[in-house]
Every structure is written in C-alpha cells, then in structure tokens.
Length: 330
Image 1 (spheres, rainbow, N blue to C red):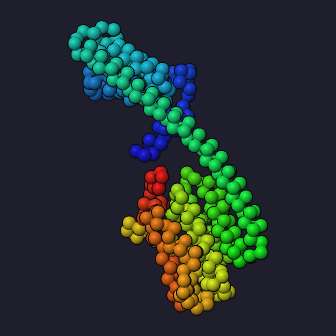
Image 2 (cartoon, helix red, strand yellow):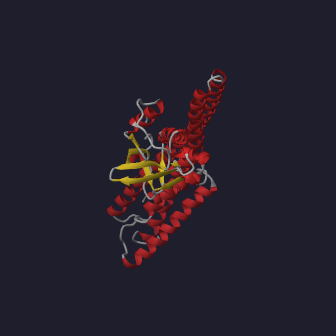
Image 3 (tube, one colour):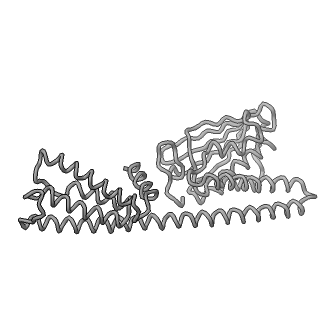
C-alpha cells in the first residue's frame, strides 16, 4: 500500500497540466478501460451495478488529470453506462425509478470524488511549494552558518595563536561540527549512514586502526551532528592518551539493536595502561551529557586495557535496513 501511494503521488505531481489535451486524453482512456471491464463483467452478471467500474476511472482521471479531466470522466462514464447498460440498451431512456436513483447517486458520487481529488492535488501542490521554500531557506541558513563558523574560526585562531594546545582542542571541535553539518546538508532526506559518519572521524587516524561492525543504520535530524562530536572526542582522546598513541593500538566499534534500544560500543585496546582521571574534562562531559536531549546516554569506563564508551539510544531514533524512517522532527 505504501508503494502504491508513492506511485500515485508521483503520478499526481508529474501528471499532465490540468485542462490540457493530455489530461482529457487520460480521462477518455480511463472511461474506455472502465467500459471494457464493465462489458466483461456484464457477460457473467448482466444488470449488475451499472457504474461499479466507472467510479475508479473517475478517481484516477481526477487525481492525474485534474478537475476538468475528472468532470469529463464523470459525465462520459454516466452517458456510456446509461446508453450501454440500462434497459432498454442503446437508447437514452430512463424507464424506472431505480435508473433515475442510480444515475443521481453516480453523479453525486462522481462530483464528490472529483472535488476531493482536486483538494488532494491542491494539498500536494502546497506541500511541494513549502518544500521548495524550506529548501531555499535551509540552504541560505547553511550558507550563513558556514560563513559565521569561518569567521569564528579565524578569530579564535588569531586570538589563540600563542596557546597552541587550546587552539588544537577548539579547532578540532569546530572542524568536526563543520564537517558533520556539510555531510548532513548533502544527504538530508536520506539521513546519514552511521558507517560513513564514523568514517569521517576515523579516516585521519588510519582506517586500519579501527574495526567497525554492525547492521546498516541511518541517523536523522540533529542526532548525527551530536554523534559526530562524540566520535571526534573519542578519536582525539584515543590519539592523545589512548589506543591510537601506540602503533599496536586498535579501536573496535560495534553497534546493534537490542530490544527498544540501539547500542554502540567503543572499545580501545593495545594502548598504554589507562588510569581513571582525577577530574572530568570538558570532553568527558560532552560525551556523557550530549545525548540527553535525544533520550539517550553515554558512559565512559576507564578500564586498564583501554577506554570503553557505551552509547545507548532509543531504537526509534535509528533506522535499520527494512524499517521505516523515524518521524520528522526526531
């Protein structure tokens, strides 16, 4: 049903211009097809529902061809049914009250169908216009945000030129934000693939130092941006103090759906022995608190053999293969 709905929406959006010859042609074709089906049905069930096959023809003609095409299909279907299937056949006479009532009900139903289909077409048209406008606004805002981020980047670089350690920390986070926003902007409707999001962060450190495993998963909304920052913090810390500090160090990233939750496990090994820090840094707080607004959480474990980060998100925030995308706004 979902696929059929998508096909119908595509036909409505890309169909002929209402009132054009193509629209009227579709109306005539629909009525002729309905007449043929009605004739076939008449062989086994004569004098059955007169307009049974013409109602779908009216609906299709109105959805695809517009108001005039729907009205044409209604009138043409009524005339053909009256002429070919009312007794006496092939004569425009209404000999019984049932004929009159059937014709009146058909015309009323046809008018209602055409009006409803036209309202649906108008709704789709407004949705398309709103989508175009939103896309323009988003592109403009994205452009302005990039400009402001570049300005902030330049200012901080100038002000922190004598403090390279602070600059390295700040610039990395700004770059992670910029990269994630660019990536999400290019693939907004389809979401962001978790593997590709991870790849952006781990590529500078050498993909062979990482093992990523889990089912194909897509993230939507603002969640990819926040996760990009979390992964940036983890990779940066692994390079400065953890597994990536030594040539034999390795990071294993595993994710899975577990009941009503989606879990990601970041496990480091082969690095220097890990000591539990005496105080929590800004990066640790960012990792552990940034997912609160999504109903998720992240925890850090400073095991001697390597840092372990466990991320837990509501399963509704993530789309796995074969599942429907999360509702807009999540």
